[in-house]
Every structure is written in structure tokens, then in C-alpha cells.
Image 1 (cartoon, rainbow, N blue to C red):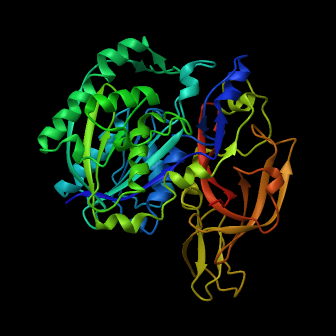
Image 2 (image 1 turned 60 degrees about the horizontal axis):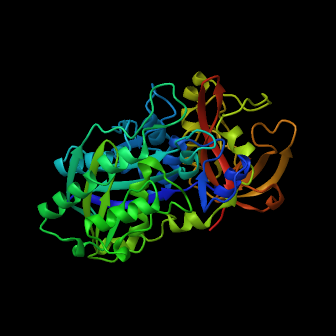
Image 3 (image 1 turned 180 degrees about the vertical axis):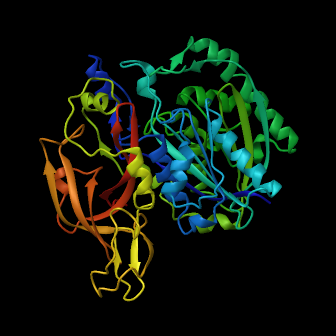
Amino acid sequence: MAGIVSYGAYIPYYRMPRSVMNAAWGRGGGRGERAVAGYDEDSTSMSVSAGIDCLKGTNPKTVDAVYMATTTPPYLERQNSNIVATALDFRRDARNTDFGNCLRSGVSALQAAIEAVSAGSLNSVLVTVADMRLGECGGEFEQSSGDGAAAFLVGNEGVAVEVEGSYTYSDDLSDNWRVDGDTFVSSWEDRFGRDAGYNVTPVEVVKGVLGKLNLTPKDITKACIYGANARAQASLARAMGFAPEQVQDPMLDNMGNTGAALAPMILIAALEDAKPGDRFLMVSWGNGCDAVVLKATDEIEKIKDRRAIRRHLAIKGTLDNYGKYMRWRGLVPTAVRRGMRVAMSAEWRERQLGLPLYGVKCLNCGTVQLYMSGSSMRTHICHECQAKDNFEPYRFADKMGKTVSFSHDFLGGGINPPMTRAVIDFEGGGRGLFDMVDRDPEECKVGLPVEMTFRKIPLGPGSSSYFWKCKPVRE
């Protein structure tokens, strides 16, 4: 039976207190905080991070496809799932697909993956869901939103979470929307979306799926319900017949509404505490509703070592400068500074080095070096034993490292000065120069443990590319 083999998540390092956002507009108050993606993050890079968490212990070459869902794709005409698959080192014949245009796209992608595996057309599919939606500055939507990602590995062997059934209603009720060229999400009058849609359709869909499976609300261990705010979610859960202790915390106070990723992330938070036999209900919302009933198996105990939600929530730094947030999101003009630029042609030529971060391993003595054989940045000679052109590919993206030296550039620091550059030695060998992100300049030191993170870099006006950077290891 096809089901969820593994799960993973990603919540950006930075959190902005809502009181900081209110203070910027001359208002007081503001409960909780929201997750804020870094200046060099987007839905694609966050999908890669969630995918890394999900694929822990899995050979990426065994996965047949990436289904990436988002309402905020970095590219409208370039397959974003291809970038994710390449960065995660999938096979070139992986069948990658983008899902979008609706807050239900993440659950739709998960259902499509389960159906593909059940039908036998694919054996294993990675589903990633990520969003970083923008609300108008100073508005309620800006405060309530948050950035984040979820990932599921779907297969038919070692299934940790079985899918027992689902039910769907599709309605063209537009309470939120964004047309091509819009920066911010638009909303209709709140009461209309709530009374005509959110308070009605999910109740009908949950009643439908429980009836289809001969279940009652008491059979559900945790209900994972999309909610634009905690009060609305609690009210909806009561209307569905769930007791408060059955409702999974939507985490709106400490990460915000992550759009298409919210319902999947709530489910992952519930799965972190799952025991074999526990039953879960995931309810999405957006132009209709999906309800999916899932049940944990004995395999659930084998995947409790992910960072997932709980550990990501604990790893954080405070962004207490609203001006910096506006600069990161491109909401104010920013002076052009020196920085790394990459051409599309160069990215293609260096595709083995760049996106999956490959180097070489000497077949004669085992020494590893960062640069690929056959690349324009190639190495022909092993610097240890001087053997010539006798290498095999060696991936660095999944390796930890330690800083050998570092520098802070305050003048050419780009959008988030100072720019920190570090030379790192990788575990197992190899050395490279990388930008360091998600760091406090004061914590940088020689010997600092670091891990690799996939981030975007400037390509030119209106576009960006991607490369790997390093960040401090935090647990």
C-alpha cells in the first residue's frame, strides 16, 4: 500500500516579533512572532531544505520524481521542481512537476503522488510544499503570514503513515487571490470568506470523509486543520465535532500562516508525537477543501530523528529590524553593491559542481577535492598522490565542516551586511570558500561547526540562480 515513508520540514532561522512590525507603523501590541525567510531564500530553496530533512538516510538516486507545490514560485516559466531535484542529486530521468495557484496545492500534490505510486507508474516520489506570501505593509495579512516548507517521501515500502482515504470539494470561492504581476495577496471582506466558505465547506468535507470510512470524530487522534487564525480554527474544529485536545496546534503564534505549507506542516508536527495505530485527519482550505485520513504504522518510530517542526522552532534568531525585513523582501529600493553574479550559461556548464555540489575523490589514494573533473574549474591532478585523471564523483552538499578562516565585508556586504565569507574544511576531506548565512557575526570563530544550505544568488535583473552556502550547526 502506498503511503508516507518519511517526512521533513523547514522553518527559516529568523523570526520577527509582531510587536516589532506594529512598532514600525506606530502601533502597540502584537502577540507572538512570524517566521521570516532570509534575503537569499525563496520557495525553491526552502523546498530543498525540507527535502534534505525528509531524505535523511535515503539515497536520492532511488527517488523517481519531485512534486513541488507553492503559490509563490520564484519562476513562472522555468520548472522549479527541476531545480529542487538537481540540488538534491536526483537522477536526470526523474519526472518532476510543479503544482501551484491554490493553497490546496500541497495536499493535491501529496494525493497525486500517492495515486502515482499506488498505480505503479512511479515507485517513490518526493513531495515538497513551500510558501512565502506577502501582505501589504502594515496590514493584518503581513503580520499573520509566515514562511516555511514541508516534505513527504511517498512510496510503497517501509510505509510509516498509511493513507486510509480522502474527500474533496472544489469551490470557486475567492476569499484570497493574486494575479500575475501582483506583489501582495488580495482579500475580499473577511466575513464573506468565513461565513460562506471556511465555516461551511470543511465541515461538509470532514463529514464526507469520516462517513466514507465509517469513522467518527472520536476515532481521530489529532485533527490537523488549516486556520488563518487560531480562533477561527478552534471554532471550525468544534463544528466538526472535535474536542480541544484532539486539535493539533497550528503554530500561528510562533511561525505564522505558511500558506500552502500550513496544513502539511501541522500534520508533520502531529506525526512527531505519533504512536503506531494513531489516526490523523489533515484538512486543507483554498478554493474548496481536501480532507485526508492517515494512520501511523510501526515504521513511524524509525523516522523520529528529523528536525521536522519541533527542532526547527527551537533553532531561531530574532529579526528586530523592520527596515531590514522590507529590504530583504525587495519592498524598498536598495543601493546596488558588489556581489556574486552568475550567468545562466555558466550555471549550465557547472551544473554538476553548482546545484548538487560535487567534487572528486581520487581512486588511487582516496583524497577528495572540491572541483569536478571535466568542469571549467576542473582538476586533473590529485594534490596528494599526483595521480592524473583518476577520479570518481564525490558530493559535498551533505557533509558537515568546520571553519578554517573567515572575514566580514561591511562595505560590499550586499543586502544584509556584513557579508561573511568562510573557508571550511569538510569532514572526510576537501576545502572550499563559501558565504556564511544565518549567523551572528559575533559567533563566528575558527573551528565553528557548519553545514551546507541551498540559497539563491543574484543572476541579473528579475532573476536569480542558486548555490550552496554554509551556516552554523544548531541543534
